[in-house]
Amino acid sequence: MQKQYRVGDIRPNPFRDIANYPYVEDKIETLRASYRNTSVWPTIVARVRDGSPELAFGHHRVEAARREFGEDGRIPLNIADLDDAAMLKMMANENMTEYTAAASVMQETVRQVVLAYAEGRIELESVVFTPGRGGPSPSQVRAAPSFIPGLPPGRPGMAYTALTVATFLGWNETKVTAALAALEEIERGTFQAADFRTMTQKQARAAVVGVRSAVRSAVGRGVDPEPVKRAAVEAAVAAARTGAGHEVVRQATERAGAGAEPPRDTPPWQIADRMAGDIERFWSNGVSVQGRTFSRREVVQLIAANRHADGMRQFVGSITRALREMTQTNSELLALLEPDRAAVEVEA
Image (cartoon, rainbow, N blue to C red):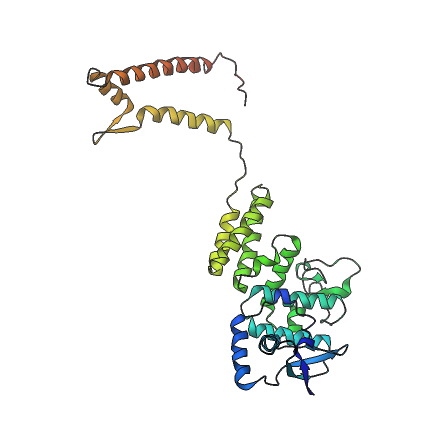
């Protein structure tokens, strides 16, 4: 049944969170131009609840009419008898058309399905548990309204999986799996919902995978995972804002997460080995002088041979004092290393 309604009386789809479904301004302006030429076509579908029309889809068309004709303008709606499941599916189809790559919109659509299922407004296929027969694993099962895997005791009726949600929506299961992973991390507090608003679906999937990888790596290295997690999330969001591809987002995330290294105790034998090498290299390492390479011993010999040259006297004095201090220090250290000397404790 087709009927004219005042624009100001038309309500959005009850499953559409306007804050999470921003209007595409170019689309609004194109529709306004079309209305000026041909008026509003009778293609918008709605249902009536409590005496007012609720849109199934066509939100951009109604918003364009609101801006063009005002709240008191009247437009035609096709009224149908639609239940909540039909309203939710129609909204999802509209989102797939108007926001094909937006990760946050896909996440919001999946979120609305899970919440509606938890409230008993829609039904999903039953999750069949057949251990050893290809049934879903515990990591694949969630209990509405939560997005975190796991089925609390006493709530089998709220069980759902990516497959049951995908079947309801008619979407690809991979797309739903990625949305659920992001919603899980939002629920855990890893990401904020706003973090995904500038991301495509591929970027969001890469960000979640990258952050999880960084956290696992941190735990394996004995590093506090919280600062690693924050750094990885910030890197993912920053990379996405530059328009980077999903692989760049993932790599940036993992690099940020790999920044922290755990403190490691150096074994005594390694300290001794490094010290011995440093002492040997001090005298053997080459020093470049006028295009030629000399050892430090040879450099001292050259300085001694030219001690009376202009400006050399002050440097000869400095080197002499340094060598005397080095000789005294070496003698003291040699005495410590004598076999009959007790070990000396050094304060940290």
